[in-house]
Image 1 (cartoon, rainbow, N blue to C red):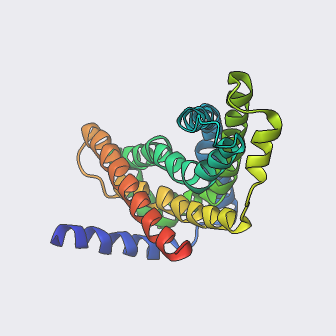
Image 2: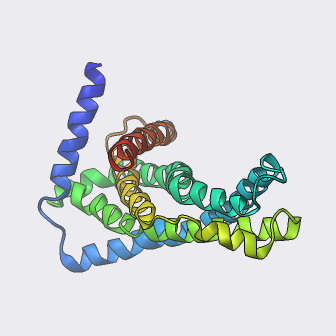
Length: 246
């Protein structure tokens, strides 16, 4: 338990130092654009692919399990929308991103630690916390746009699966999408998405910055980072859901 408390304390101290003694503006701007490319733009492909097909699977499974003449067809569209907006897009995609983005962040910072590049920056008087971690936090503020794309493609994938599979008509699926729509659910989804983004940026950075050992240690740190980031996302999801939806 003491070790866990030490990690938590060091994590928050890291966050405090990240927002102190900022790197020069031009350098920071270049770093931020690089992080946007690495963390956001290069994640669009895998997120789009998974969202489209999982949305289709959600719709098909809903249709199969509600295959009863007494149950209206529009329920498929309704269930697909609710599942994707409330949980699949913000939470499931974030856990996947913990592996994709989190491992990248941990390994990139961990490699700099192993090759003593971080030590060299500190010798030059650079605030390495701000130099390495702050651009990642700023880049991940764009993460809700990825989730918005995931929601759109997930629902579209469900629509295509239903129409091509004959599980629901176009009119019935669209009716289900519009049925009892609560705009606050989108607000809830994007609030927790933003919180997940901060976890995705900072927890892997922590494990990369404070890793120990050589090249093998980078791999171990990436694995540990993925586990703890996923745990933090699941716990945060539970807390936010209890606060915002109950």
